[in-house]
Image (cartoon, rainbow, N blue to C red):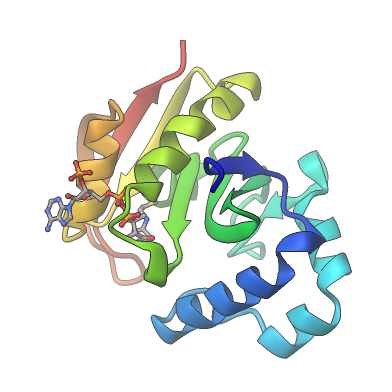
Length: 177
Ligand SMILES: CC(C)(COP(=O)(O)OP(=O)(O)OC[C@H]1O[C@@H](n2cnc3c(N)ncnc32)[C@H](O)[C@@H]1OP(=O)(O)O)[C@@H](O)C(=O)NCCC(=O)NCCS
């Protein structure tokens, strides 16, 4: 048994990633991805995730400025466990709702300490990208997410109120200096 590690997405994790994607979609995440398409063009999918500065975070590209994003996967014994997304800078939407950092653990691997591992192991990458203070936003009802961020040193700033389009988010800063 090996320790978990954060790595660039890679083709060798295909089987476990696809299983995890099914789990995520069952809870309503990543529904914009078609599993069959991802499976049949997995090398392309991986290539796009690893495009570095050219890989853009653009959920609302028509009305918010896309920003470069680094994607890392937590793997253990060769199997995919979770994802860390690091947006290299904020736009007005990320400033209020999305943050620099997003982390997610596949449902069947939750409650085993992997979210803490993702965040702790991810901080050197965040610093390497030149981010001095990293913003993480959490759903106020997400007790687990809050616990993880506070455990990892996140300092609470304020709460972005719910709008017609977006839910409320608690905003935390992590010091990278
Ligand atoms: C939030 C998320 C990443 C947590 O993943 P996880 O692997 O289960 O988290 P961990 O096992 O590392 O840590 C869970 C911690 O929360 C604690 N916890 C569990 N239920 C809790 C509750 N109801 N209230 C407070 N803390 C709770 C656990 O005890 C554990 O802390 P401990 O190790 O100090 O005992 C996972 O639920 C997820 O992917 N959610 C969807 C995406 C998301 O919300 N991401 C966070 C915002 S970016």
